[in-house]
Image (tube, rainbow, N blue to C red):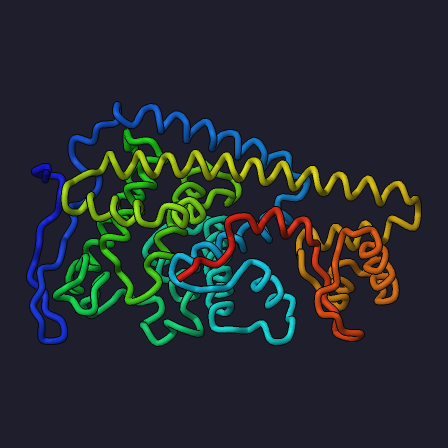
Length: 387
C-alpha cells in the first residue's frame, strides 16, 4: 500500500519514440520516518562499526591491509554489475602478469582508481560534492566498457532499468532535464547541518536516492555503493575505508533490488533502512573478523621468520612487502624493499620452501609469487557470480 507523501511523482518522458512515465523522487529526508522502529538494527550497526573502528586503530600498518581489502571491494562491486573477474585476477593484472588484462579486469581496476581518487580527495579536505561524484565517475569509466557513455557527466538522455525497452522496464528514473536539480538537492542534504538523523541512516537514504535518480548513463550502481563509504568517512564514522557493503548486497541481490523498488512504489523507507543497517552490522563484523585473522596470519609468519635469526630479516622484509602486494614479481619486490634482486630471489625461495608463498607462472623467467594464505582469507565471498 502506498503511503501518501512518502513517494515521488511520475512525469511523462520520451525515449526512442516511446512515451513512458518516469519516476521523480521527493527530496530527502522522507517525512515521518519511524526511527523508533529502526532503533534495534541501528544500535547493532553502530556497535559493529565501533568495533571495526577499534580494530583499524590497532592495525600495525593499515595501508597494507587496505590495499588488498579495497581491491576485494572493487571485485565484489564490479561482480554485481556482471563482471567475472576475481580478486586473484585483479592482483595478477596489477602485478603485470602477462595475459591478465581482460575487459572485466580492466573495468575492476578502474573501480580501484575511482575509489582511491575519491578517498584521497576526501582526506585532502575536498568536500563530498557533485564535483567529486562526477570525478569519481570519470575515473570509473576512463577506459574499457562504458568509456563512451559520457564519463564524468550527468546523463542527457532517458535511461531505464530492467526490460528490453523503456515500455517494459522495471523502473524508469527521472527525465534527464531534472537530474541536475535532483542531484543538487541530494548534495544539499549531504551537507545539511544539525540533521537529527544518525549518520548511518543518512548514508542509507543517500544511497537509495542516488540509485533512484540514476544520474549517469553507466556506472550508477558502483558509484552509489562507493557513496555509502564516502558518506561515512566524510562524516567521521570511519577513519579508514574498511566498510563496504558489496559482499552483503551480492549475497542478497534480489532482496536489495526489491527493497529499492518498494521505496519508490510504497514509500517503504523503514524496510529498506532496516535491511541497510543489517548489512552494515554484518559487513562490519566480517571486516573485524578478516582483520583479526589477517593479523594472526602476519604474526605467525613473522614469528617463523624471526626464529631463523639474521637470515630471516631480509626474508621478513620481502614478506612484509607482500602483505601490501599479495601477488608480486621479484622486480616489484626489489622496488618495494630496496633489496638486491639476488636477495629477493633467495627470500622468495625460502618463503616458498616454508609454504608461505607460491610461484604462479611455472616459468624459469618472469616469475610471479602469491602470498596464498592471505589471498585465501581475502577471497572469501569474492568468487565470480554464476550467470
